[in-house]
Length: 527
Image 1 (cartoon, helix red, strand yellow):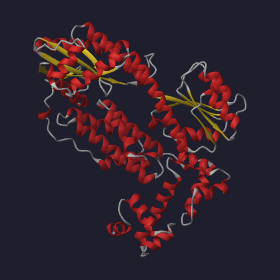
Image 2 (cartoon, rainbow, N blue to C red):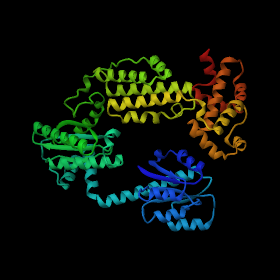
Image 3 (cartoon, rainbow, N blue to C red):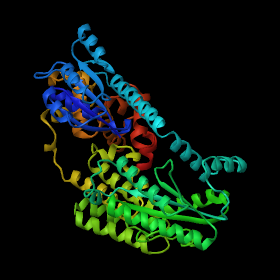
Image 4 (cartoon, one colour):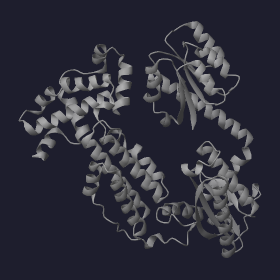
């Protein structure tokens, strides 16, 4: 993941830029920030980042001076300049230094995002070019291997490509294994490697070295980042024994040398080199079964008979789970979660997909409890993808249970908080929404009385509440409308005007967005 560093001596801008953009969505890690050029130089002199976003006019060292000092040390670093002054001399100096863009304050977020995206593309293109130049044969080899294991070659073409690489295709038996790296923070504390990418490279090199030392096995990395090892041989017994020996050694060395846990699956034994794609497909599918076979050293195809698994799963008392969340007792919540997943793991009848589904339902239940009690919490407003991404990356019961507990703990922490968490400015905004929701409300109309720019007011509100100003206002108004629908005989268009919507059509659209049904359906259902 690429790194970005932000420098600005205006606190609102510095905080705003760190939170207004979803850096991870752009494939970027926000490495750090500084409130001055000298402070930034001290940090970055010995720490390289990919992109530096800096103000020009700062008290000690200005942005151009900072760039001039960093460029000889980190020639590959990219620079984006922010300034409140549209002066040609600054632009000219920046161009001479090779900046990516010169943005005027207040910063246009879309322009900043586009600049960052184009800069990342340049970096990635340069990285790809350098990698191609240094590893052309490896790239060709990995591409051929990946097309081999995914069955994307015609038979004769595949034989010709493998012969071109000097690979013997005459063995009667082949087996394919897949190795996935599990990034465990407790184990990595003992490792000198700084990132997942570096760790994966180290494990790949280990797999390749060990597989080549043991004889015939072939190693490459697939498009999921998993290591793939193809073992050919003259008989089923020989291939299986050789594959298990190599994989056991890799598993041991990965833990002792790289301080990393690897999950290993061995696919079916297949006749001839054309059977490698079937073996690979089986090995990839077997990865699901670490949820119910976590303690196994290596899961092999002949161990698992997926068709024999039944569909029944232990039932969950969702009312009890909701009650535990509202009681805010983390210990009891953890005990409940552990009991559910322990039962699922050892019941013998639950499939990996059913275990995933149970985790999804627990998070959905948690999200709803939060939404019913604290509208502005990010768990209530965030997209489902943000909550569930980790679930589908989990490969063990422990990882899955840890994530569900994390979501539940986060919900409990927020349910325990009081309004004192908000700054005076945001408290004023919340008060104005509660008392003036029936009138026109916008950041532009509120900012003069609060003596703050609308752009930064919006940033501050979203940072503290976890929800945008417009979403908060609309949600608040819709809740008022729901109460009026149930407690009065007012017509829908009258309610629309009463809660601050001048256009009935827009009210209908917002009501359906936040309630899931139309106002009329809502009134009829509740009746």
